[in-house]
Length: 610
Image 1 (cartoon, one colour):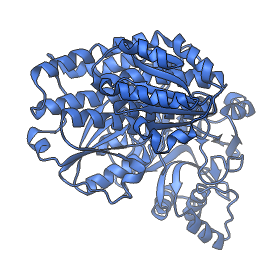
Image 2: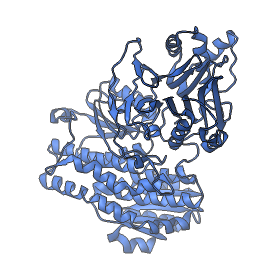
Image 3: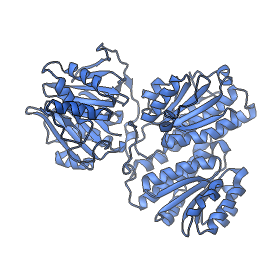
Image 4: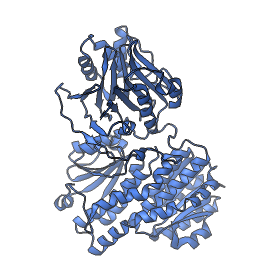
């Protein structure tokens, strides 16, 4: 979603803000802006379009002389993308400037109240009312009182960065249901919605909690709770390598991150195999608790949801507990049947996904135990869940997830095997076999990456298609969903995923001459049925790109127009292998269509609003 960065210190602020905003581009945006404190007051510069427009306008930030400022990349929610709707927004008097992530749900009511006071809004945004409201409550001396009174009035979610003309030495920050981080550096202090924005300047992060307000100056960071009491905050040291958030010579972050998947899988799994056994640390799932479960519910959004669908097949097969997968955006409004006998698995890369966080809170309110699978340490979901397993994937910059998806899959394998063993539902031989094979998966992923030219050739054959269908059965269907999403989000081609057995129940009517059907056929017990489905679509004019095992190569080559063969592995780990050629295929299709691969239109990396 939108990105925030703020700086107060001894260096020129604008170049630091521009640099930080560049590192937040991956979150998705349609406009950008900065506000700095100058001798003439608060100066705002903003523009619609790519950040480079703002950068050129300000000569990379050199045009502004100030050591304090706030910056923002906006992804439109209220009001179309335009110069005037871009952030920062200022009060009518010009004494308050605000950047905001989130949604002010009662902005219309506030706007009407302000208009009755003679204050007119100039934009279509919900954020502008925050600036006006702060100025309305500000008495000329007590800035904190104005901020507290404002957040008491607003409903919804927010991460706020606020400048006051009367206070040229400080930034005020506040959060509710949107991530906001304070960072301490040698040359000053920062606020940011993502630590990668300021990683070059600071590795010491302080995570604000809901209801907290912070005041940062050049040398101090003060945090207060909702009752205005000082809060002692823990400092988290970030040990990511700086180049983990850099392209490192690659054309796109997505390509770089795909190539990192073997190592990411290894780093996720290897530390959790101790003396030949799985060790998940301090998670509080006991045999007694698990035996009392009625079901497991997995809640997530997007690609994380597809991880959950794949995990459902494995958990039910090995753990023998019913599993329900729910889209987080639907879960909380469905009067869900969860209680103290339900284990809820929450999957989120950022740990801040608004729908997923809200769904988790609803599950906890109903008595369920929650276990989160999260990448970002200190994120809201990670902190609020009863237990957390970190994926350790490192920063993922491309909007289209690849390595984070692979790491999430790896955690579900570990968890499945661990639970099955804990319940006595997996024998020693199977346990050792699966652990040994899991250790070989990184090399098999690398073997697929080494065949990327084959996927590039397939993409060159099909990139002009306007409608593509993915079909598969069982575990392959879960991967169809992910493959279809990956393709549509970066190439803008209409794409759908279907369970192959459902073709005759409507979908096959859409097949015509030249339609591309991507058929996944790795589930041995269903291979012949999948080949029958391939025959069906071919008979209606479809062109078929089939992905299967090496052992099936002869039959697949006979039936399909194009093929790709995966190394052999246990059924449990098939998603980790199948995901890679689907990612590469989507990448090369998007590349040949000239799409903005790392920053696809209308999409954001972390969706922190409903």
